[in-house]
Amino acid sequence: MLSVPGLTGIGFTGIGFTGIGSTVKGWVGLAARQPQLASFVPQTGLVHYLKMQYADQTFRGLYEWNWFDASLMLPYFAVMLMLSVYGLHRYKMAYLYFKFRKNYDPHPKSHFAELPFVTVQLPIFNEQFVIERLLEAICGLDYPREKLEIQLLDDSTDETQQVAAAIVERYAAAGEPVVYIHRTNRHGFKAGALDAGLKIAKGNLIAIFDADFVPPADWLMQVVHHFTDESIGMVQTRWTHLNKDYNLLTRIEAILLDGHFVLEHGARARTGDFFNFNGTAGMWRRQAITDAGGWQHDTLTEDTDLSYRSQMAGWKFKYLPAVECPAELPIEMVAFKTQQARWAKGLIQTSIKILPKMFRSDVPRQIKVEAVYHLTANLSYPLMVLMTALLIPAMIVRFYQGWLQMLLIDVPLFGASTLSIAIFYVLSQRELYPKTWKRTFLYLPMLMALGIGLTITNTKAVMEALLGIKSAFARTPKYSVAKKGEKPKAAKYRKRLVWAPWIELAVGTYFALAIAYTFTNNNFFTAPFLILFVVGYWYTGLMSLLQGRFERWRSGTMANPDESSPKPFPVGV
Image (cartoon, rainbow, N blue to C red; front, side, top):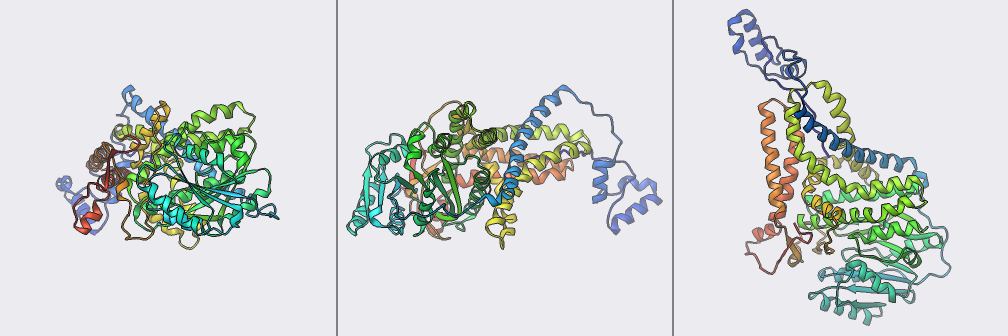
């Protein structure tokens, strides 16, 4: 969400100017003594540039506003204003997080005299390489075995069925209360699997973990006692990262997720606003699911959908940021795009479904307003596409406008949109890592560039949601890696994009040409912002095309036709 300051740059200021450096001063003195040589004096230097841009009045009044310029500038500023509204909301989140810090109570209301029965649900789909790690962690949970049930809910269509069944059989033979449940169809996808398991579950408390999560042994005991408060319907814990340092992408992903789990969840939980179950690493009260109407699969974010319906039914949610649950981050660009596109589309679908019901309900206005921000935030991606289309024409039009306009319009828009991103994520890292948070500044440019690069695929996902176009639940490939340098085991689940990377490369090239244009007009202050667009689109485009090839290049082996799925990207781009 970037704003490009409007700068003037005429390129000619006459004879009178001031340069820097002894050489330039010597040239200026020579020109003063020999007027006939003045026209040959080099027009360089920072002072000269600033004077040329902002102080020269030679052509003042020659530019006149016209309808053509207005047709470009009004939509541009309208888009920037809407992006700024979401940017200002980030400031609000940070403010509320710190203002209501005392509202966070990490302790349960009391402790169960007798522990309740807990069912742990593990929904999986074609994830054979992480099943062993998952079940090892779940079967290692510290909880009485007579009070525990573990359901492995398998919708797999490949050899994961045999792998998972064998692992479950082995743990069951060792006395673990684990059962294998396989469906012959994927009706309802993940929501359908969870609903099918819930119908035969023994527990009144339901813990859910995705295949790439590795909960610590004490996770259940840290969470379960919070349900002594009869008003609590769901408890969410904070995601941490098994492979944060695997590559540049995973480092940026970790910062993005930390911002969500620290400031967004933290602020909403502390102020009493609705927040969502994240689909995993949380525990539900069975009755809270039932009262909300159960799991439904008409959106791709069934977790957020159920969360809002449950809270509208009167249940309270609790967030425990101190209770951590490690998970594997996507290590490749297409896997990351798959995840982000599903979330973007699902949240817009949920907003279309839930917001009209909320507006008609007696939920406090503050909660309704926050729900709008939360569920519609991904509309910023189509807005970014519009801004991308208007950015260069707007820059050309504003070439002949004054610097005062930059101070009055661009600087506030920049502070509301772009600067809010930097502050938001820096603050979240400062909360988590008080000794090393300053390193975040090194990743901020790439973080913002990556956000820009996602606009093509996420815009398509958002537009599909707005147009009512349905799509399958696109699972995020899990590669079973935790340390830098480990070779991914699940290359067979790798997906290929069709046309999106080429569009991203083309748009990045468009902005590279725009940078060349700015330099020809001495508009140097605009270039750093345009570089973010070039890097963002080229990074997402190239990494989408080249994923998986780095391992083959390093090993010197040829491509294995079984390693890559012949099917296109699950969201259809």
